[in-house]
Image (cartoon, rainbow over all chains, first blue to last red; front, side):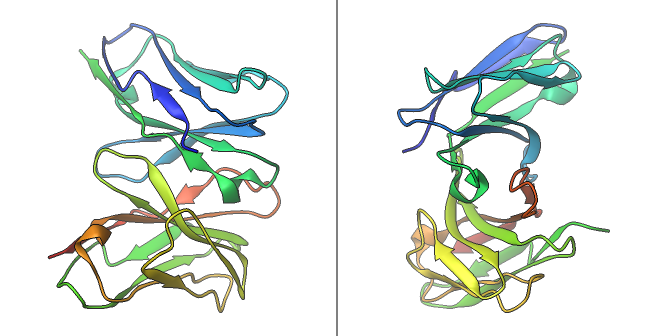
Length: 112
Length: 113
């Protein structure tokens, strides 16, 4: 079953923060985050595995609460280059890339 | 350059025609995937392969076929195209070592009229 992402869309000013949530009704082994710019292919951001770890690089980080079957993506001090659609993909078991189910995406727009 | 190469980038088909979308990767990745993305929607898995000679159905396989005769190539065949197959198609691959971090091709925009 498809994970649910919220919000569907968000508009920010440069420098503001944003949180994107991903929730599943199924037990999860992993959560993947991808960003897609208009007309381009999705690009990998990070993967979080069962264990509740938090990951991050630059000013983008994510958490994974396996008990709640939820993940959140945190964008801090957003930049214009952060604009795009963010997708979470959930995996139910190890070797999860072959079983990823993607949400419908969150469209993020960063304005100057 | 290393990566996933998809051809063609754009194609218009008439209802009932057939075509093959090509996908090739030069990273020696075992796992390869075909996704479709409808406007404003997420990615849905059509077929995937865990190695040469091995393929399996994903979430939306009806109307498509695949083959994997080599590690590098994973073509997607559309038989008897229908308007419902109008979509953007992405091929992706990943390594057996980590089985994560999907690397996507640039996509094929297909319209069936």
